[in-house]
Length: 256
Image 1 (cartoon, rainbow, N blue to C red):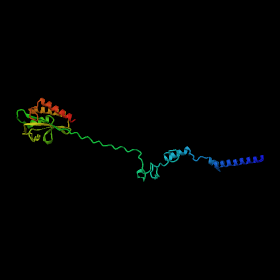
Image 2: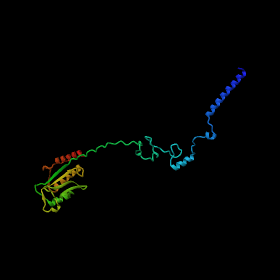
Image 3: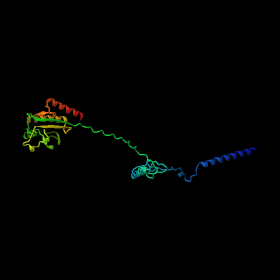
Image 4: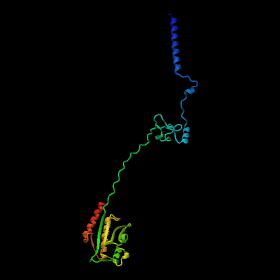
């Protein structure tokens, strides 16, 4: 080939390469009639004034600070979803196919502890007898006078009582059945003695109550010229008094 022919071949090859390169560039760059539109961003955030207007109207922003609050859809199963906001939707338990998880775990059931059985309090009865010293009888008038002197009150079962808060602490009855000591029948009434008895527990402190019983019994025996005996009709001595006090103190400890 001549020199001219080689030159023409090289020029043709360069032209083909240029055409190929230009065609590749045209495929890469999209043609846009409105270059301003092509360069514009796909979304524009509204100005701050719009957000404040939305907030003042709805009372809240959405999670991105733009527009009305987005609808929150509860978890779904089987492709079923709720069209209402989560806070306004029906209870998930009522939606078909929806298994909603509770916001808070249910409290653990507590096993009820059985209440302890009430303590059984022992009942204790104390008694002191008063009998006329010489084996005679006590006259009715003297008897009622001595009972009233010790602030004893005539009442239920027609006998006398030491009262505390409307309840008897101890009582005084005639030595013979039925033991009634009715003041209305004092004239001509006689009795060989008296029975003083107390039932624990009572309205007063056990130790205070028994001390009152003992002191009252001593005073009545003096007024009626009588003698004290225990419930076995044995003389009630100082040793008997100490034993009774110790017995009541022990009872109080067991039944506190």
